[in-house]
Image (cartoon, helix red, strand yellow):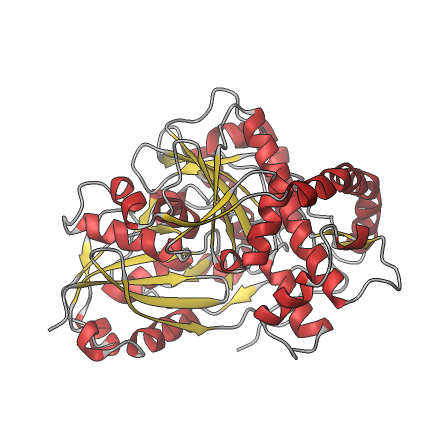
Length: 514
């Protein structure tokens, strides 16, 4: 008879991962099911909420039946900032405008003009960006008023899964603090921001701590997933807070998570007295703690683009690693600016675009792939420089996410940062963080952060090569100057494109599919 298991559902940007954890943190079984992201116009990114539930259901049913019957709790994690408008019965009224969608830039600019960038940063902790919920709601109100009027609630991706699992609405403070409508010092909805957007706090689910389990698996969901009905469902947290928890971020340890995008996070006990205006601060999954974040718009997604578009899908990620390893450190002085979906931290430049610089006939596919990995690593270095400029110690870097499974990318990161990079036993730290929150909810651990480092120790450390680190130091200044030189060009191109349409793209909005 199998021992008790915690089921976690981690809703990533490209797939839902269903995992059964033993209570010692080991994985008993795991399955992943992908779903598509639609890009109906340049800068747009949409997903269907029901596709998340279908993927979650299919993933769970792929797990061994005897282990599914042993589930004692469910934990959740998801990407953040997306908007799912639902009716009174919880049915989606349209697709989710996900975090990477850039269509609401004009609405964001109006929001900033109304309140000021400094006030928005001080109240919400966020650097104003289209990633967050507020500007997406403003876009809906302006461009899809029928849906805006009909919506009875706005859910983020994890919230939708919680509703499908339990039949009850709930959210947590980590996701609420990514709406750009929460006062993070007061931990309450920001009345002025909500009024400007045209919503009330009642438009969002009730707020709970991440380790709370206010509701249980419904009979309907239990029948679909083939797990016990009545099992407690922890509210869980956003993917980055779950990852930071799962890899033991804190006390000088900084997380670098690479998947579809790359995130650099540090956990601190309070908002720093001097908060760099380029750094986001949001509420952490551990009550009372603050998560300082910087993140790119795309990183692993660029490798996927390289694989699918330039290499026509004729390779896989291990082969991409082999190609990149065939090129020397510095990729023969080929530099890549990884801004194919705009630049977030530390640049915060939505007009930026991807650039290869220094390309010659001597460069092959390996140099192209390696330069992408190195460009991401340069951006991580820029993020660490900002953190340390705030006095946040980054003595230890831990790499997690799908990118951490690439030994070559870990070595590149160590060489570019010129410091050791550790990889923990579980690189799927978001799922582990969700498991820890669920385990705390049912009383298995007193606090999640104490359990994290013992359950998920660093098992591999990559130390910088003096020769490679020197090569990257020589290229670092050129990389930084390249962006500075191109910034006005990015702005000019974007301005000319915006002249063709109010949404930052030529033409009119396409008809919604389905």
